[in-house]
Length: 240
Ligand SMILES: [Zn+2]
Ligand SMILES: [Zn+2]
Image 1 (cartoon, protein in one colour):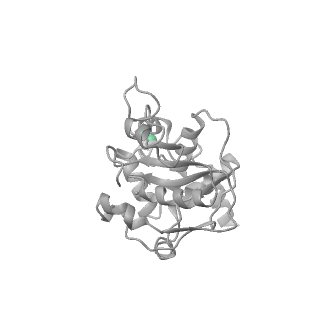
Image 2: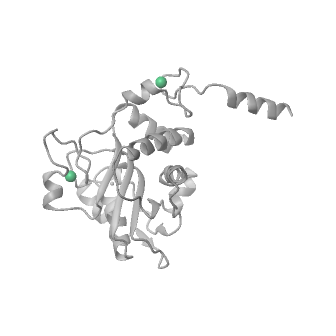
Image 3: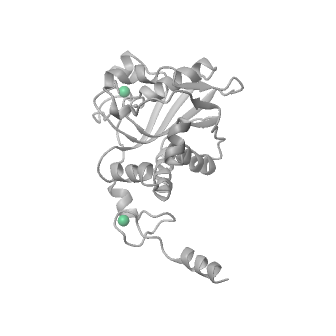
């Protein structure tokens, strides 16, 4: 009885903002001022999310010359400042509440992009079972579950598996990342979809998603989008 009362009171309390600690005016713990101060992406290449001059077209030179396998990369933020610490807390500090805040930001960013149709399903980048056991959750799947619920799009948590336990991409040289990922994923033979969105927390050089795209294309997927919270490693297309 007392526990229920305390729980009700707790939920009636205004949420403190996870950045400034003041009362949050949203239904999650990030106030509108702090939200506006985050490094939102503005004019960027639609395929690799590098910043472009205001006068440029929708794709950068390297993407025009050598188009990637995915049709668009939607990253809510540049990986810098407060976003870097929020993602770190989400991934390594058991910060599932921070994951909710980041998912909400990504959701709001997705809604600002005009589109004809939404993907048939969402595919979070899978973690190898060893890393999953160590962390206790897959951060990409946590983001994906929120987005799937808010957008009413099915999420596939088991159709793609990570079959190789590869070293973390950040620990190896950019030129070795592609080789490190080769054969890392397996797509279930039952998986059928034409248009999917791969979900991850951070996009760096694209070697992880490139390998997943390769396997999804082989499984018959025609259109692949990549949705991430933040775009890191700008200036290079050789690195996760
Ligand atoms: Zn705040
Ligand atoms: Zn580009």
